[in-house]
Length: 165
Image 1 (cartoon, rainbow, N blue to C red):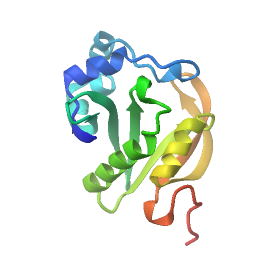
Image 2 (image 1 turned 120 degrees about the vertical axis):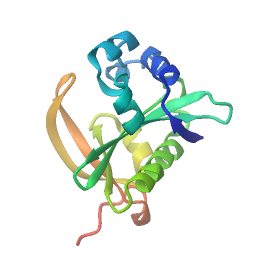
Image 3 (image 1 turned 90 degrees about the vertical axis):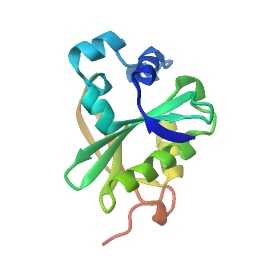
């Protein structure tokens, strides 16, 4: 697995992915709609600055990552190809993205948000070195939902609560 710039070719493929229930909320709109609205990787500048594709050694698209800058934090967004979910790739996939985030933003906190019901993703994130540090409710594209904030702490051990200061 390796990270490469997210191309229009990759973006079109991601828009065609379809996750089964209950994960269908992670399906992207049609590519033409993304470009028309200029949202997320449909905006060329945002795609170049914030997104990467994760490919196999032959260039096949495995997933994508978003590196969203906040003050003192680099927040991750990510997606694994739906046909590759639940096949044991999650922790390695997430660790690759988190390590790239550390390279891009040395010294900044690396975190992500995950819906509290998405236990499959939470397990992969914990195995990759993320710990739940907060739980809250906020608006999402599908209405109000409860999220965990998970912080990358690989030196602390997978799934461990953060050390007290």
